[in-house]
Every structure is written in C-alpha cells, then in structure tokens.
Length: 384
Ligand code: GLA
Image (cartoon, rainbow, N blue to C red):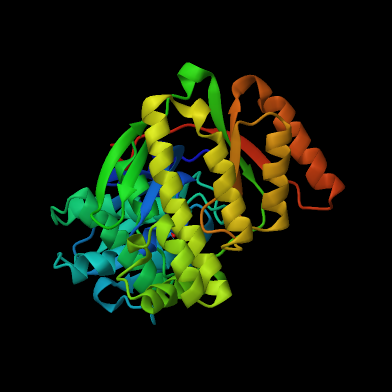
C-alpha cells in the first residue's frame, strides 16, 4: 500500500514545482454499503467515506496556467485553465482539470495553479479514487479561488467534471460520500432531493469490521457496461411514463413486467428493489445496529448478479467465500464489472476470511486478491 500523506504531497509539490504549497487538502475514497446504480435514478444510496485519502498540494500562480503532477507519473501536464475541454485533456489529469473547468463554468475565477497529488486510494477497485481526486481538488480550488460554494454544490462540480470532461456518465453518490463523510457513520443520500443524513454504523460496539476484497480485476466506468445499464434504466422510465425509476415502487413491478422488454424489466427490478433495501438498511441500523443488515447486503449482491448483471466471477467468488467464512453479509460494491466486494464480519474472523479468499482465488485461477479492513472516516478537509 502506498503511504500518501499531507507530508508526501507537500514534498512532491516541492520537488516538482519548488517551494511550499499554499495548502494541502485531502478527500477520501468511499465504500458503498448498499444502494448500487440507484443514484442516477434519483434513488437512495448509503455509502461511507473510507480511511484511504487523496492529498492535493496546491498553490495559486500569478498567470492562468495550470500545472498538474502526481506521484504516479513523472509527467507534468501544463495547460491554460481557459483551454480545458474534453478535447484538450485526457488520462488522470482530466479529473483535476475537469474540476477547474466545472468551477469556471459555475462562474469562478480562472486563475492558474500548481497541483501535486498523492493518494492511497486504490485505482480501478470501485473505491472511488476518482471522487477522492475530484473532491480534494474541488475543496482546494473552492477556497483558493474564493468561490464560496458549499459541499453539495462541490459534489455537483465533481460529477460535472467526470461526466463532461472525463466522459463517464456517473451519478452523484461518490462525490457526496467523499465530501460529506463522518467518522463511524454512513451517509444516507436521497439523490432526488440531495438531502443527506449521517447514520451511525455501530461497528465497533458489535466488534464488526468491513473488509474490502479487491479482486484486482480493474473496472473502468468509461467502458460501455455502465453507460448501457444507465441507458436501460432511462428506457424503462420512458416506457413507464415516469421521470425516473425513483417513482416506481415494488408494488408497481407486476404491472411493469407486462409493459417492458424482459431484459429492461430485470434492470428495473434491481433498481426498485435496491431502493427498498437501502431504506430498510437505514431503518435496521437505526433500530438494532449492523448485526441485522446482513441479509439485505446479500440480497443486493444477488440482485446485481442476476438482474443488473454487473458482477463478475471473481466478485461472486469473494462473496461466497465471505459468507462461508462467517461474514454476516457481503456484496460487490461500486459500479461493477470488476473492482471490490465487501464483507461485514466479526473482527476475529478476518484472518480466516483473508486466507480463504486467497486460497479460493488461487484454486480457481484468478489473479490474487487484496484484502483489507476499512473504517468510516471524515470527508474532505483542509490538512494544512
Ligand atoms: C459508480 C458511479 C456512481 C454510482 C455507482 C454505482 O461508482 O460513480 O455514481 O452510479 O457506480 O452505484
């Protein structure tokens, strides 16, 4: 694991650009506890920010040039901030430069800046390294440019950067989790009203932990799978005459089945039942704590595997092994087609789980997984 910190970001800044940055801001990756592919359907999600962060060391410049660098490559990308568009930027720098672009679109100052990024959020694992990067840069430029936007507006800035400059048609969940995270809590978000509420996870009191089983099968949101699922949801909403799938209830499903193409119906059924599972999870967490939510996590995984069809063999295998190793619940997390699964499990059983997943992956000829615990951490903040 990389050991990014405020200090490594400031040191990286010094070695690439010289001098001390005006500040270092950080933002976390996220794990989604439950509520997958519901955000762009104006539904409900329940992610939490994790103790893996991206650090952005930034200084303003006197001109209008943006220079961006990171610990992952020697390259320094240089562009006039006014020239940023989906034609002029690509690769990792499209995320921070896209944020600058979106802030300018929202009426912000377009002053140049030097930016150095270091991160310990794994990339391509479904833990939202992209939102961590966007959110760290968004809070930094919001402050340095004096834009004065609040966190829910910054979440939209990050989403706009990702949709329009990176070209991934993602929802608002990841940026919200990264900006609104609260230690030991999940962030319940109504993606229609954007109302959010911190929900106590109660893990420690129950000696539980959330373990990430990263399959190391890389997932990319710019590939076609994510967009095709989104398109199926939009087509279901059109055929049913609703603004979004948020307006379809579990009781409406029987009727909807008669109206929709069978594949589109399966996509719909996932979204509708997943929304119901999120609400039920919140209710159970408030009432009895995390020991009660295992069945919902597993049902969510099965729905993604069978109805939304975004799981892969490695993720199904991780979930099966987790349940066999005594996990209370387990599911893939994030956009799908690779990435990570999570297990909610008693702390004492983690060594057994880690061992069992590694063995089963080996037996089945999969790439070795990376297994680690995460805790719910605070959202984006200024470090120094
Ligand atoms: C990715 C997207 C999110 C959300 C999830 C699926 O993480 O960035 O907006 O759609 O996939 O729940």
